[in-house]
Length: 122
Image (cartoon, rainbow, N blue to C red; front, side, top):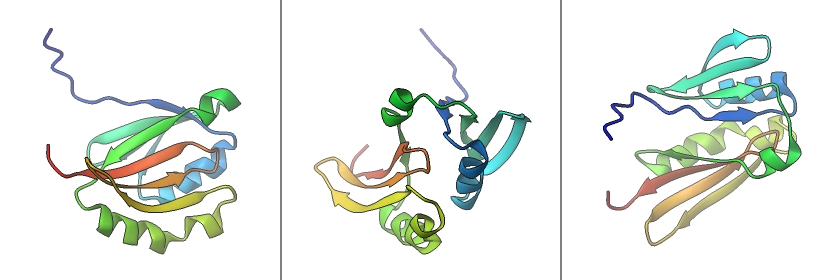
């Protein structure tokens, strides 16, 4: 099967939609408001939908991996944002070196776990 796909956009939830919208804008994503309870957040042609929907089990098991070109640079920029001081519940975990590459982690205000990683070999 030849998909000829142009993008993939996961749907993620938010316990506090307005707070999460602010968080993702601070993280550098561009917001496109789609309705009163859903926005599209984009960066460099990639995106995800943020919904005003909260199901604890779903949120607690949601992870998103964003591949970046230089995880060290990304970590420095991410740290400079000081998001844990601005948003309750946000956690930032330093870079880990693994056999496949390097990654750092960020929990959003709802608890969604973001992996920001760089692969050694593709």
